[in-house]
Image (cartoon, rainbow, N blue to C red; front, side):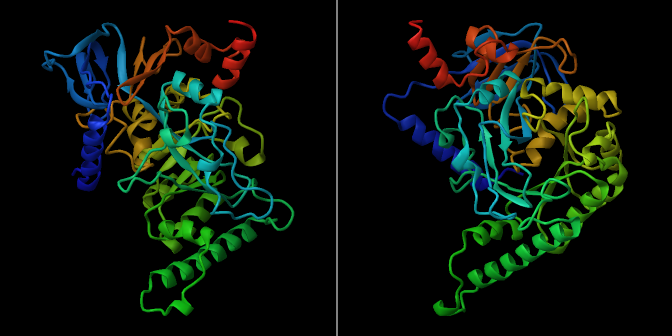
Amino acid sequence: MPNRSLTAVMLTATVLLAAMPGRLAAETLAFTGATLLPISGPPVEDGTLVVRDGRILAVGAGVRVPADARRIDLSGKVVMPGLVDTHSHIGQVAGADASHPIQPDVRAIDSINVRHAGIGKARAGGITTANVMPGSGHLLSGQTLYLKLRDGQTVEALSIRDASGEPMVGIKMANGTNPLRAAPFPGTRGRSAALMRAQLLGAQDYCDKLADRRLPAAQRPARSLGNEALCPVLAGERIVHFHTHRHDDIMTVLRLAEEFGFRVVLHHVSEAAAVAAEIAAAGVPSSIIHIDSPGGKLESMNLLPDNGAALEREGALVAFHTDDPITDSRLFLRSAAMGVRYGMSRENALAALTLNAARMLDLHERIGSLEPGKDADFIVLDGDPLSVYTRVEQTWVEGRKVFDFQDEAHRLQATGGFGAGHDPVATDVIQREAGL
């Protein structure tokens, strides 16, 4: 059922944009002749995708192309929704520091460089939406930020907004070996859980008092930015993205989520196959990663390549992520191919890159599939998405092309080489100094 408030906001935004002085009339684009992979339905041969005002107007076979549409022939190509990365560290994001293991007041939005070369490389890999997260060296390292990889110059321009106009965020938590170190950080797994439980109990008390209008002003709590960030978590309005690997650590996350009633997405879950039934029974989604050479710490050396297949068999929701720079955003399609190699269905593996991932960010009504009314986020491929030989040729965000392999600068981002790692601002300076 459509989200009425979201629809109202979108319509209002469309009217306001149309009224802006100097704004060009919206162009209708019709992409024809391609094989369409809608994700929400079966593949469509010789399909047509019609886009207007940044949204999908029509999609399918035998679609009537509006008379004013500019046709773009994509015969022999494959078109699918833009990829959704549920866990990325692009943009030089940096969250909490060494002063405390739990810092919910820290915000990723205050530390993302949207002109960083990693953003362009993610577009080159077909990624159109990313959940950019601070690191996992803390029990709680701060608030994540959901980004649309538009062609913007500020983090505000790339932020995805909710119905009230606020940037959409999650909360990053972690357990296992990453947060274990000298005090004030925990030294054991048991202490990790105890610290997190104490923080949530304190936040619960704060949020309850804040919501109690009967309390006199003198008894209302002083403002706490950390507890304030956890109120929507405890109300089930903000998703917890939880870094966890070992099967016992996974069960600790499920225990905390049940105790405090928060919504959680498990990330990495290296040993998910060992507790797949328990994850499915809890109704908790998992965002998994495929890496060629598991290691780095003892718990990730046991990464099971059939995690996706095991979770799919149990009926749990599965998505993939890059954890960029752990795996390269430009190779994100490979995650689905490896999922299929180890037992996932083709349909669910492709959904794990798109619609399933969108569900884990509460964005499935806007992105993740090719359907009328959704954002026109899509990619153009020169072959099957699961083939190692396939290349992302174009990436479109809200009806605007943000990556084109035929563009020399974009091609450098896709293939690498000297200058590929330079930020766009740095590249401009280098070219100016060289007189280019």
